[in-house]
Image (tube, rainbow, N blue to C red; front, side):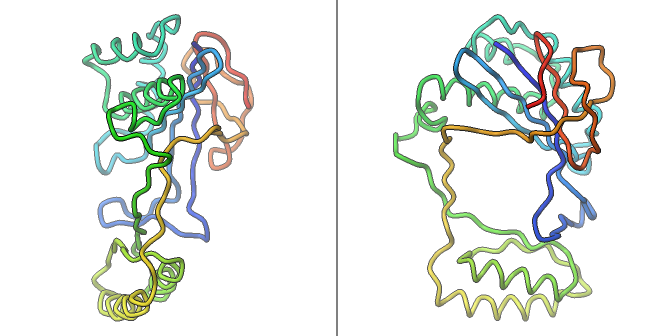
Length: 238
């Protein structure tokens, strides 16, 4: 099996900025991806790492721990054996454990030709769908209301609201207006959660801070790139 670690900064479209009371403004979502290749199948896991405001773990610690854990795993083993090895490790931080666990589950399900939920015992269906919501982050009242109206126009009925006291009254009045509009619309769109035939990672690459492990040589600004590190042999930027 071949494992490669990738890093990318994701941004919301339309200039939308994640902004909550606990996080403050967040310019982008710093994300790690783990890509596992086993014979003709590929499994992918991902975890966001710039959430120290929630778990106290810095992005740098997440990257270091991911590289350390992945570098110590025996990639000659199959997914089931690696899952057992991961479960036996007691010193792996939660974000890294989740990253590896998701990738192994995804890979195993693809090898079996089923969805992850079916593999875990859910009824087999053509697709798993669940009604979704949208989040309205702290912003100016004008942008807040414009975004709410956009979501309602798209058919969303549930809006999760992050509020700021200074503009709360205007926000509530606007949301009431959106709620009246939504009464005439159908329920929110459902998002398919079943895996598809292909999963892609960002195509550009940049280098992670030094680790002594084989890594790609390309280097691009963090906001545009991804870094690839490979086990047990050098990864190629894709």
